[in-house]
Image (tube, rainbow over all chains, first blue to last red; front, side, top):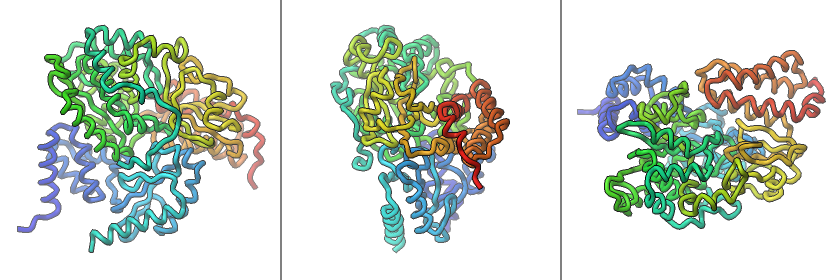
Length: 165
Length: 399
């Protein structure tokens, strides 16, 4: 029998809760896992997580919407977070931001039509001595120039093409 | 791990001279109460920025009677301009875990938790590896180093992108699976922290320093720094200087001395303590980095002569508007007003009356905000208004 995405999600959440424990403290790790796999935490997922943890879905929404790395809205497979803080500003983040806008044809807080990229500003990522710095998902890139930014995007596109093909 | 991309320059760190497990061995060789006395005698104060005496914090927690206690390593290094904890966790994670183990014994905790910020996710596999190795060596787990009944283990937990979670009660809320909103204090975490159990929350550098103090002794540690700020400190130095990086200096170094070391003598100002710190103008570069003068978690951002000081204020205030958790009114509404004032000042169109009101609002935020975020977010704004009055008031209105 075919398994729907929601049934699969429920099974996964149940398995995670078995591993992490049934307590409320499992909520954030679960949300991180769901976000990582589906690039979003939609209303149905929140309901499922709430059911398994036996809390109100509003509680799940409340937590998901609080954290910058969890917010429920759909994100691209590659989330590019450019550090907006002072030292990266001094180091030339504006040129990198322009290159990313141009290369991806989106502005910050937008997602590309193909669902591959989201572009965001982020607060300091602790790379102040080697800015401008950005994160692509968990991966950090430092001393990024406009040219290097385009290369990073190209590498993501190539990686996506490989896994799809 | 992305070792090549996170390579940081600076000067030689004491950490590199500490023999593995020397601190832990020394701490386990003396009675539990003496461990806390040693930390207290060293004069060690919290390295995250708030500067609370570590020995006193441990003492409070040790005095609590509970079946379960925790020691949490605050690795939510989110203060803008700070990256020394990233370097410590990358190169000297063992020292941090040693410090946690010593603290665990001192307060009677059996579990330590490293709360790692989401932005440092790439460090987690490395930290978990080091923890695993320590378990295999008998430095974590049951009967540590052969001491019967001394059980202690460490796990890592991830943050999810919220500056406010560096505040210890918000951090605990986050660990419990809630929004990272600071709690009312008292009760303090040492009395009722994680899951209502007595909990010590220490900064990464504080814990590594504990290991060093036990390895080399309190007299050695007190040989650095000043009377009221003992020891040395790691500074994260960035911005307009020739040699940014992580530097170890004794407390008491002046801003001018520091700038000479890093090649930033022509700075017109230095932001010390990150977005929540103060902006020190060049005329005050003889001031010292120490708890009794300019206290700091170690963020030093050098502001060159070519910069517009209002851009600096604007950058920090945009940060606070984004990162305020929104729970208390002074912080939620005050930060946008300060941002508005800076933007009007940039256009040369800020009515004096409005500016006076926003200044007063900033002072109110310092006392009326619920946690350190809102209490400190006006500092940069107010110090910039005060230190750069000429630069700001001479601005012509934009056409």
